[in-house]
Amino acid sequence: METLQKFNFLEAIDSYESLTKAAKHLFISQPYLSKVIKQMEDQLDTSLIYNHHTGSQLTYAGKRYLYYLKEIYRLENKIKDEMYLIRNQQQGEIFLGINPGLASFFLAEFIPQFQSIHPKIFLKLIENNQNITEKMILLDQIDLAIGMSPLLYQDELSTVTIYKEKIYLLVPQQSSLFSTQQAKKINTFHYSYNKLESEPLIITPLEYGLGSLIRSFYKKNHININPILTTSTVPTAINLSLAGMGSTYIPESLIETLPSDSSYNLYKLEDSSLFAEYILIYNKNKSLSLLTLKLLHTIQEKIAK
Image (cartoon, rainbow, N blue to C red; front, side, top):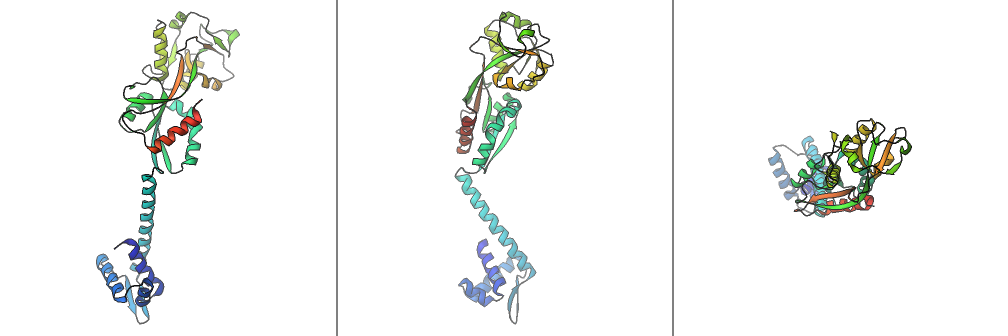
């Protein structure tokens, strides 16, 4: 017997305090109602009603059973509603991967709007270095990721470009490349690229993202890179550079975050390949769900330049 039918039978008895009146309300015979109640009592091994000279009432067990039937019916309806939303791609969860450095820069740009439009789609953020994020995509542990090109696993992953921006060399006051006259300004790099070979460099991992881009730039210009420290995020590299530990490379959008009370030079290198490309990353061999496509389109709309 379905939960709703059990609930209706007991609720009618509780309301009318009479098997006869309850049966009449339910458009069934009184003997049939009595038979059904007896079957329920046998199943529970508990008395659900007691009869007296003026009618019938639910026992304490009957009232508690009626309460739980109501809760079960409510939950069954909630399950049906939620399954409908999931089946029609209106509810669910998305695992979004991102580098911690990019997270502080990008997430506020699109998450508030996405969740206001799709309140039943839950985002779960997975913050890792990009090499770990790429592996998690291939293992189907992440649906979509925000990162930087080039990829470590480019043969197995697909990308959508969000936008590109120029890369600048940040030189601290302690560097031999520092010029007092050019402090806190963006200037064309007027030295020979060979000067970069002796410049201590703070860099993100050379295998992927910005680090890989810088490594390719040095290789293209036949100069050796001189990394003194590797960090997983560009903001950390910037802070260490401003503390005088070495120079670093930063995307144009982070220039406005540089403190006004620090002395530094920003150099623009005349190389067409030196730009950051921000990308959306997903598994090449797996179709994106409608939920993930909704997120992808929101990110493109809010971040693309």
